[in-house]
Length: 509
Image (cartoon, rainbow, N blue to C red; front, top):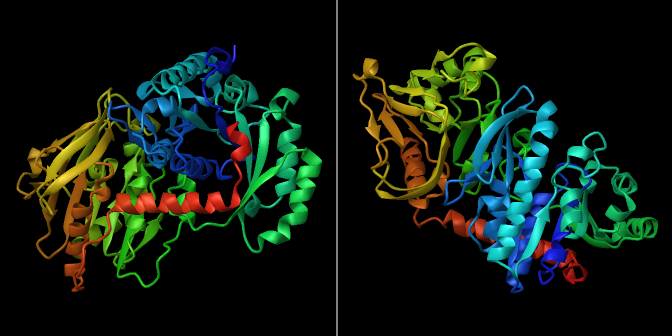
């Protein structure tokens, strides 16, 4: 039975499908959520199943994809794991951690996912939809698909595209990326592979990332509409967005949008990087440029180095050693370098990492205990259960300020008594959330478990000011704009551009 038959008073859901991964589904949903919120509606984002290591933690400690959290911010509501009831977190070797309604419940191989997880997954999707509608009966769901809806070898196990569209009887939009080329074949090919009852759900087509004069595509628009009998409801121009990519591979394509930066930041591109949205606040600092580091090199050109989070900390630490980057990082530290590690990055900065239950990548190498980079006198032991929670604390360094963020990590980190001659200090009043030390000749080594640390404006500004002082740069004469205000402004600009070029009125009935 379709959901609309059970809850006939609900507003018609809108679903955004794509001709491929990276077509622009996430940003389209984000824009539509803000457009509808501004028009007085109550939009709620939803993605039945997402695969991403870029995660968020809700106020109940539940994990969800960051893209759905961002869409919730665009909707003016608090993110909740039921907006993304299934999260798959890849961990290499064709395996993923399975998270249902925010809680980690197992590990699966790609081969066994359909057999073991398809039916429980569908039940948790329906449960989430029912819960959302019971709490917010007047809401309008803005649903995001995943990848392409017509991967014929996988369609029998596809939980989050056409199965959800049919269950909700949603008004669907098909988004395609003209930048990739072959836009006509993308659209027609996708529609041809749909069953008649599925194709009927497609009520509009969006051409995304168009460069140049929009009027030059008018003949293309007419051809698509004549061929498919579906209106092209939007041609969206190329936008210099500052949102995080869904796929960590796309990080290497991201380039700083500001010219003449005063501070150069290097971020280590770990093979199993996670939570790369941690660096969005730095991407939006006009004085900063960011470069992703993926191979051994002299790091002296950077004013500070960041070791990001990792889904497989042991595996990534072994990568750092084998690639020579661990040595580069140690040499950088000896030359008055400033380093900060977040979550897995903090753990790698320590002296030892022990993985007795094979939770953090040790099984790939049969090494349950390895050496860290050794710049902080800390040892980490990984346990069976990970910690996920929102954080509200107070920092002691580099300034005193209120701190908000969240934790997602396995393992406990504590002082290494064998290295207790090294002076190390707590960054926060909660003593187990982070540590730092000052090098004798200059520079600092710091690490924290708090994701979102750079979203805290006072903390970020003071840390950057430490770097500015070390370079004899003048301190800013005025207070910087809050990152969350900037983020909201970016969403407004995104929605404004979509609103100019997109007609969704027909989809609201």
